[in-house]
Image 1 (cartoon, rainbow, N blue to C red):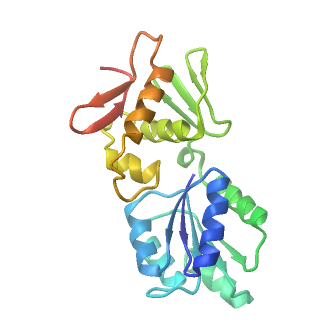
Image 2 (tube, one colour; image 1 turned 90 degrees about the vertical axis):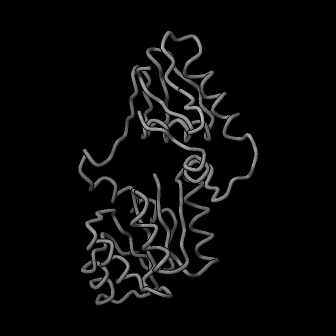
Length: 225
């Protein structure tokens, strides 16, 4: 899942982001409400975790603005404000859940899972398919036809991103930001190396290639040439 964390306490933010990444999630973070709002409105997220008390724009206002723009991303408020009135304000502002600090990380993960289960089945994809290539996001298994494909964690994330954008050109910048979480170009061939390895795993030995290089633009996965 792609998760947005908006938390101004940098130590708490690092702890939370590290734990979510270790749990297999892709995480973007922001240390103030304005940055968090910009991210929430510019990128798709499965869940947003938002602190109540933030600089530049508080968490309540952030979530209200998100909802006014028609964004329905589930929001979990994470706050030291634990009174009933505070929790009610968070839910009325558009939050879907409210967890008070200090918290147990395992409970936070359980609440994220619960938020995802509440979403309509159409909104949560657990299996991606392009041609005869299938990717199960729950079991993290990949198959092409009847052939299982063994993927390393980074290869899985790369293939998931490509399949979520099947038929579209995916640029190096998009891959660096979404798969490697770089917001700069490290000027290495890391993408080319992983694309080459992935192509060997999903296309070698099959009649129809699925992973294509779009010269001067990026890469595309599609079932037809």
